[in-house]
Image 1 (cartoon, rainbow, N blue to C red):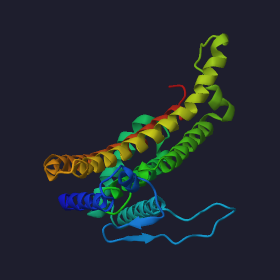
Image 2 (image 1 turned 180 degrees about the vertical axis):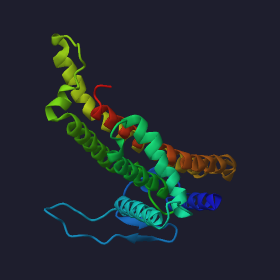
Image 3 (image 1 turned 30 degrees about the vertical axis):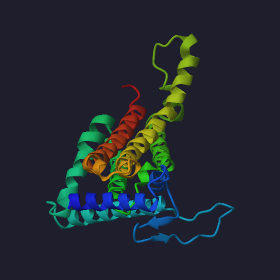
Image 4 (image 1 turned 90 degrees about the horizontal axis):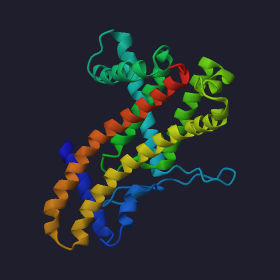
Length: 283
């Protein structure tokens, strides 16, 4: 099944290059960037209905927003289905048993060791974050879909949500003044306190910034490499290049499956780690 999906994806990319005349790199950006239509090349495209502007702002959903909503819906369906399965039996089966592996992994291998005492109240947030990013990454591997996690605006939004969760967790545990006071290590000379305060304050923002860029860069890189490899066939003007380009593109595509899992894990574990650092400042 995976090979069929990969073949469809590669064929879609090839057809798109043909339609673009194989000139320039605009067709690569066309497949990576957001748009106000759902592309089903070579069968055509569906334009998303325009919404009226709100206070002069265009609120029409884009392709990435559409698949972001789809990912959120899949997360909701997953959690509801697993919860209903547990109500029927304490021993999950089938669908619930499969997702229990991921749920226990996030709880026992991410939240518990990185947050420590009181980790339980953060598990629902971390599960939602993990599955939302995971579904978003995998949706991008399906032909004619889009990887919304390769949109820096969306990864920035996820990073902001993580930033808020980190600050709220730290302030609730240590108090508003105690939280910011606890950022300065004990025993620091008085002359260095202003410098340390500035460094720690900037650190509050560099952490979510790193989360944003890491997810965005890793998800956009794979798709760019695949399209660039396929484009070599047409840029070089010979089919012989395809003997090397297509297998390499297929390899990168299969590697993207692993990257999709890893990036969801990294974003979640770093968020959990930052929450643990904010909640338990004494460590």
